[in-house]
Length: 207
Image (cartoon, rainbow, N blue to C red; front, side, top):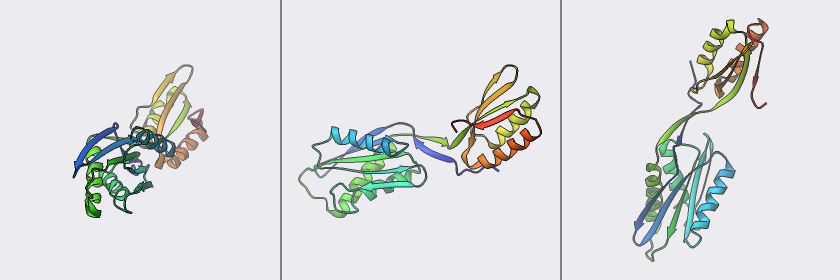
């Protein structure tokens, strides 16, 4: 049975949203990010566009287990955590949400800030759709035509949803994506096929 641990939901596109509460303007910015460099670039982009803002508070969630948040000068726990909570409620990863605040002269209080930042984050997240991504590893196999059926079945068992790419010449060659959680099982099966001379060679691409 295939493991679903490799399946992750990501935002389909960036988004923005605005919310006015008691004269303060809150602007939510959602960006796509795969790593810390993407996070830094997006945060710098927003901060440069809103350098006169009172606060640029943010949170991000990468892959399945990396997250961080910042209150950027707001009372502790009133901005970054509500933004991160909205992200986690969405079920998506590989995104950053920055909420820019222009202070309007009326204090919101702790509860008011939590609600304002959380609502703005939720609003901007709702502006994008979700796409399913499967974490995978690239594989290349050289094989005789007689075992194409065997390899096709192997890829159906361990492969990611993306269709494999076949090349045909004196021998067949295929490039495919293997689900990250299934790489050990796929490698064992391929080693057995190669030991029986049913494939010429196989390797992980990029290693």
